[in-house]
Length: 258
Image (cartoon, one colour):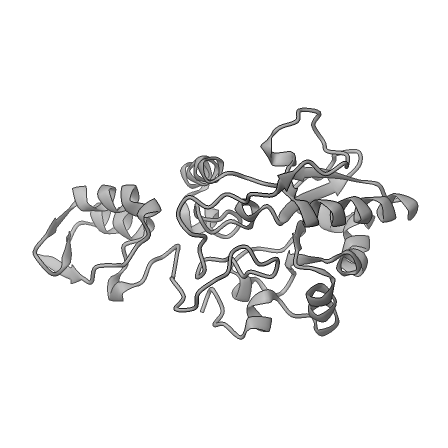
């Protein structure tokens, strides 16, 4: 017995995923029909083919997103265009937990300059910081996400890692940070460190927000990440901080996990 599933409009960056699902399915001229076996259904749903014409990882918004805007909302509903790479990436002059001059040190120019000012202020306050990971190419995000899925399964992986094409790291406007000693880098224990408290109270002054705040997991689609900073410019950062809003709430979009 077979059940019919509507075809999904996917960007070309997900075509390889669609191909995997098609290998386990049969198609007629209008519908994608999954073989009614648990294995086939689970794989296809995990890799973006879901009933009612939606996707489990990327639910495309009808709104056009200006991805060059510093305030662009990038999430599971608003993916980056195929092949997007920022054209103004630079290396911020700040400490990282590694010495190599590689792509994950880079950020877009304005964000990098603001980061330098933020790091200087934190150091003056007695809480020096270090970068963990900033820009991430699409290929690297794909590699990471697939690794997390294999390790923890799709359901858990998508609570802390983004599908390729939907990661803020790919914009060059986001960075994961930690204390200068490198401990608790991108791990839950960072929430209990004084650096996290300082960032929560002060990041907005430099144009950054805590992108995935505590208590808003059902809205952002991701668990609390006090280390994940997103540059949006001082005006928007101040407004979001004062009103305690996520970018999704500010834009008035539906929660990612509804």
